[in-house]
Figure 1 (cartoon, rainbow, N blue to C red):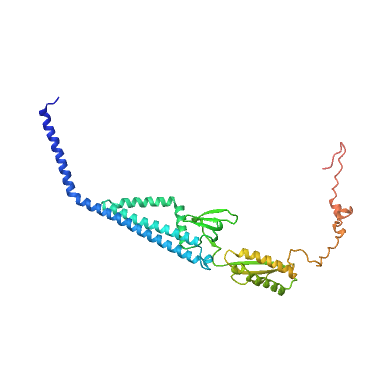
Figure 2: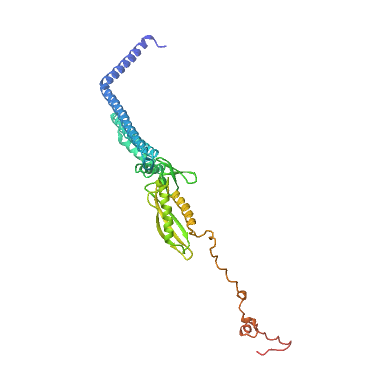
Length: 361
């Protein structure tokens, strides 16, 4: 066991080292506290400004979207609101655009603030930015379909190519749009099925609900009918339809008799056309067919394919078939003395020689 005299110099040495360490630490803090305080205040100021700016931008975008929805609801209450403006379509479009703008603004503001904080900490941003660029390229290459869907959805919404309530033909599917998203468009098919179509798969879009539509009806009648009488009857049907509700709102133009679309030996086709409200052309076509059929029956105009009118001359019965027509023509082979029969007869063979008789060589 060491003596107390031996331990005293060691304790004194340890105390001196500790005092020297504390003195060095105090000197280091005294020399650098101003720098640390400056860096901390700079970082705090960057964070506060970024958060405040992000909040102001998001509130401004939200207020702008709310104002767009309010204007859409105001227009919807007018006479043309239900036709030209769909509140749900405008709402979804504005919400989608607002979501994209808020996300982009938050990414730009917070990303810039993060880079400024790293720069304030004296961190070299070169390798970090290079690594982030390589990682971004790898992620973008792996998720290229997702990126394509997202970008296609953004441009579709911003360009207002279609919206909720529109009937579209997207190539891969067709139906009524019930939801428009940044990645997927949801359609309701004619049979009630729901189609989920990725925006990146839509190469072309046919919007059947914009502008106006055309209703076309073709009626086949006998070629002996009076064309002037047919035009008069159809025009009467058109004038009556245009004055009744709700067809007076669905028709956007007069019903026109375009004339003969096809003339054949046993029939001729009369074509009728009308400009209608978008999406109402099929209902107008069905109503026109119904009324034209009733009007033709009342006027005595016969439609091809219908039952013959009372007293109408039936077609003349066909002549009885000739019994000799089924008998085949006589054949030359039936006469055994004819050259044809002799030519088909087998060639006779020579008789076999008797035993022991030699044939001449």
